[in-house]
Amino acid sequence: MAYPCKFCGFISYARTSRMLTETVRETYYQCGDYENCGKPFKTYSESYAVEYKRKLLDIRTPVDDRQMELPGLTA
Ligand SMILES: [Zn+2]
View: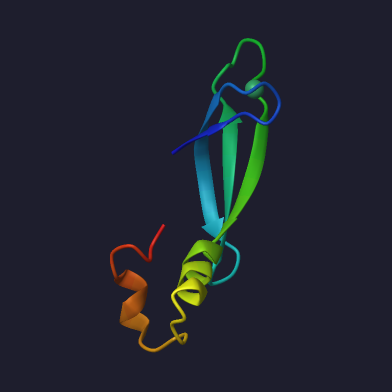
């Protein structure tokens, strides 16, 4: 997984990640420009998009946990 370095914009790569809650993942990145930057940083991602789309579609949550795996509802 790649992500732009928050310091210089160079492509950074995920080093490790862990789940903080059931829906929030913390991911550690290190800048791929090791000579000029190489700084580490972390990001948080949450499964917000899934819940948002389900609200747009007026789907009661959760009708069934298996709906989480339907095509188009996952990011
Ligand atoms: Zn950088």
